Image 1 (tube, rainbow, N blue to C red):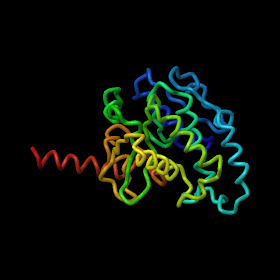
Image 2: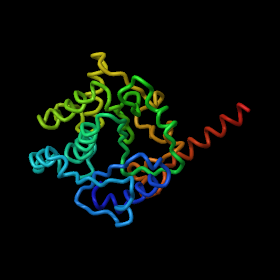
Image 3: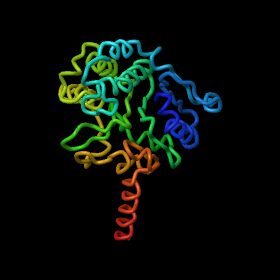
Image 4: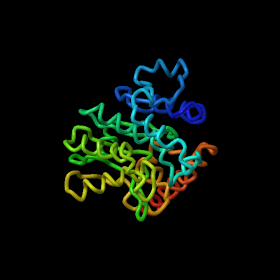
Length: 252
């Protein structure tokens, strides 16, 4: 997150994570040019990592493409190569730095509303699977939450292939230029080669469904993507809960 993001939603993300997640799980915050509040800086299980210092290849990628006309819209999604490169390089850095743990990527505009347990987290990444993701039929993956087992023998290959898309600028050969498309390109390739097993957390998700909150994740968290940041919640989360209550009532 950058300073504006920290002020708008990141501070709340960290606060609710610290409140509801197990304290033996460390939260690494990739900070882009800002210092956190002193109170959050003192959280025992939160570490702030300088994004640019830790990811020099990101700095070079941004420098190469800063003057491209198609990169001048800061809200561009489909062609947001520079915009979403921050996220891709942070994921890659985290998963290459940790080789004996499960790494969870969590978008900075996510709030936790219910206690998260290690047993629940374990259920989201079945044994033998390298990565769990939020899939959507006929569309790219929603990458607001992704799990990676860095102990898998294909971890380095996955991350280095992802990094190479940016370092070589082959990212621009993909249909869209954001982190979700890059993740899918590498994941699908390694799946087809039979090198990794994966787990789709939202197999029934379609098109642009807000699959984060309508999946199992919605029982513990809310992803305030897009205009939901201004609302402070996802309307889909309430709808999903009402649907679940109706199903339970009708089945009783």
